[in-house]
Amino acid sequence: MKKVNLVYGTVYGSAQFVAETIKTALLDAGNEVGLYEVDDLDGFVPPQNEVLLIVCATTGQGDVPDDIYPWFSELKTSAPYLPDLEYGIIGLGDSSYDTFCGAGLQFDALFTELGAKRLGDVFKIDAGETMEPEVEALKWIESWQSLL
Image (spheres, helix red, strand yellow):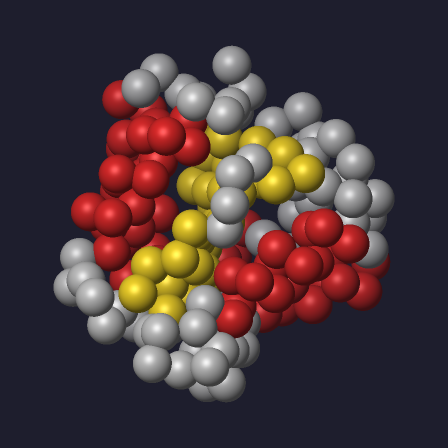
């Protein structure tokens, strides 16, 4: 079973809480999991023999949150070729905005450009429909794990 590396970008802490909740669920299911704090991302290129799961809130006009933007920009600039990397995306946003889950979609586009392969669809959690995004994420992670 491949190790799952969790990375999150948050504005008010919801994405971090979702990532921490998912980490626990993945560990309970017997997976090896790494949770990367923002300070751990400088120079981090996801290992291609492991799986990457990004949990990302959206800010402003579909922007990547300030805490994770330096890593996003670094990857975009350095453009490592990652054809053997498998990844997943959980986006948090508000569907009343045209840029719903825009940050997660930007990460999806970036990793597609880098040659990586997405496992499943981008999972979008709507703040307008749920006050507990971690509950929705736990339901999704059960089916997503079967793709590992």
